[in-house]
Image (cartoon, rainbow, N blue to C red; front, side, top):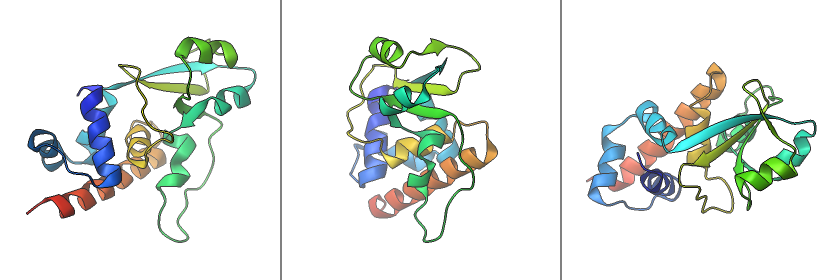
Length: 165
């Protein structure tokens, strides 16, 4: 899936907007698991270490496990535990500047996970909940993965209910 298609689906899921028939069929024909997998192909993730995680945190639009609390909508619903890892998209900066400013060093075992659409565009002021859900669904942690899939399926079902005749 292209980054443009992924962003259009995320917008539609978050805002309930209509889609052209071809893109709308993607929401009709794929369950949340397949949808999250398709969106993941448009996003690359690099892992880093840093001595000062706060510097990275301040320069990222949070997503996935770092923003799970935004996916809980039911009163009294919350997800237990907080991860020491940081997940996010660069906030108004290039990847190179983020690496320099936050003193990041590439590492497979790092705790800072930087997400980026393959074309480098992130058009939102805040990470959309549908994108947080799709990114959470990529997680190896079963509770994070399940929360992402559940939130994405709820958004998909809501969209289908208002756009199916």
